[in-house]
Length: 431
Image 1 (cartoon, helix red, strand yellow):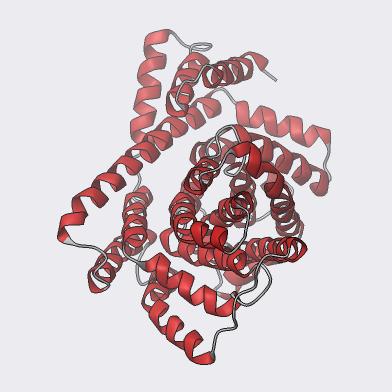
Image 2: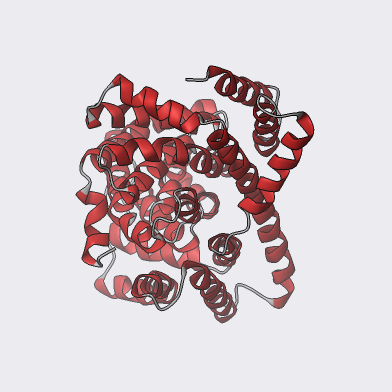
């Protein structure tokens, strides 16, 4: 095993992050330095820049800017309010009702928008003040909002699952989307159980029971928003259109819905388009840089070296999966989700396929792992959004976050060691 390229890559990348270099630049610079172990500086620079460009040359990646735009349109289009109203009629009368509403609303909003940060921002700004008014602590509300927002990255449509499909060499996006439903709902269920018992222990106020009429009314108000899932997922699974075409349809549908609800106007469109463009630029730069690093690692045989090392430790699938989970949890603490998926999929996927794991199953495990990282400092983007919206601090949120972290880890354990939780739905459609 050649240790020099691995050492150069790890030391330079960690060192650059430690001094505050942006992640995309850290990835690119460490890729160039690693290449310079084998070839001169000028070819190293040109090769990495070329790989950044070719890494973005993918039809599947066109889905990402469209889903980002549809997420922005949903966030501004009054959809969150209708989803929250529907969730409130379902669980508002239970102990911790508002916290349960947050989880259900986040699952619905995240599934429709495909963005954890959009979900955390929408749910936190709408439900946060209401929870505080009902006697919930600001920190508990923020903790529930932060963790539940990540469920939308598992429940389709999900940009990160599209990225995994690209990094894995073409795993079916339709299979990944279907595979995400049960793990995402399971994670949300465990978060609700923790929120229920925490609220009961603290004696938070219980809301009034909703009438059947109110449930039916709010459901029909939410149906147009929920119907987007039927169009997008149904179209992809049945083969009517691709994920990229589905993303464009999602934009058109949410734009029309926003105009019907009168929450979006012609005047507000430039700001929505600008915000979407800024987010897309950041994501695409990260993808391009990560694709170049992935290629450099392959050039230096780093994935093969790490794979052989892992398999040398043990040939027991349970032990190997435990090690990979621990490594991914560690990676998620220090690295954003998109680059982590692009960089570590080529490393770990050959290992898990060698022990007989389905690539679709591994994709869901990887995303679940990295979802936990989004809720942890120092780079947890959803953590910072949730704390910022709630107007509190990370230090104060950590205590109520811990039992919710435990709930997410339990869900991760079940999904890892019970593959049918992931693979049952895709198998129904022969995917």
